[in-house]
Length: 173
Picture 1 (cartoon, helix red, strand yellow):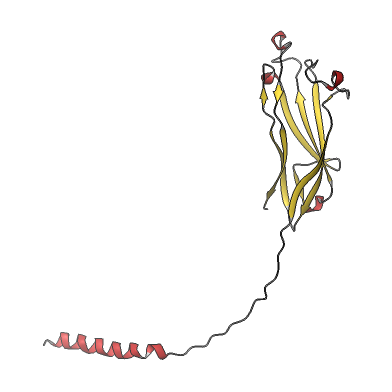
Picture 2 (picture 1 turned 135 degrees about the vertical axis):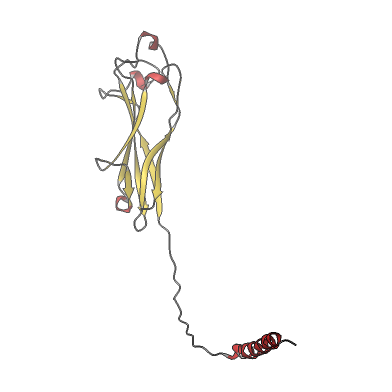
């Protein structure tokens, strides 16, 4: 046998003997317990919806409260709804929005519909756990502008609005 082969076999045998003792190495360790506990989640809701009829910008209801009769260029119609805010949970934040409210009909292109929100008289786009129990006022404003884009072709036209859904969507800051 060559010397290099004998040397390799001797090294392999020595390594095997050393590894055989590796399983008996001792080391220290320790453990500690972390106490378990109950964690409750918070909540977010808008309840007690109370909505007005549509009201003209002059403060009056359209004739008989019927939107099918009588808006003219320059009018704004507003529907106001109030909700009680339930917002519990440390550092809860929620953005406000309104979804739905699609427009259809011949007058749809001539009007704009815009939602706005306030809490206790202050304009807001977000609520927090500090608003728990407060009143959220949501306003949907339909604007039939006077002038640009409105001509005699809009007389007798109709706009149909689908339902709006007021949303409070939790966000994490």
